[in-house]
Length: 103
Image 1 (tube, helix red, strand yellow):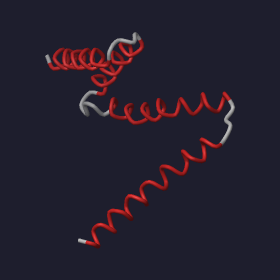
Image 2 (spheres, rainbow, N blue to C red):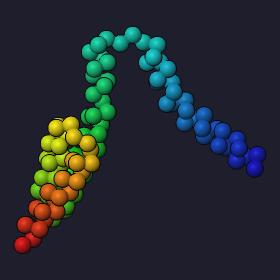
Image 3 (cartoon, one colour):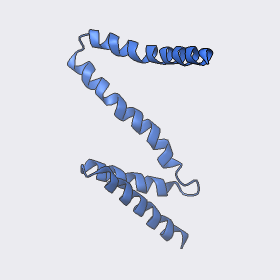
Image 4 (cartoon, rainbow, N blue to C red):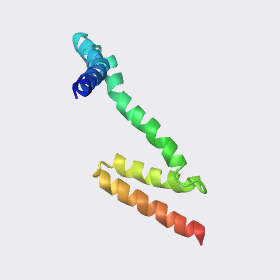
């Protein structure tokens, strides 16, 4: 029991140090407005890099299904509607396209 407590404590410290140290160091720096705006774009770029390959591989038989669904979701996202509208209409678009394609 004692070994597990030290193991959990050690793992939590090993996990916190690489996460807290950069945040602490960045908070001490005075960043330019360009650097701040560039850093604010990193989550969006990361999200796009994670999602885009999934869009292309959504249907291995037809890549257009994912592309159409992704395009509809993108258009709804640009219109600033709630995210569930984008998801619902992207799924409907992909499903209708699959029905048309299979007939």
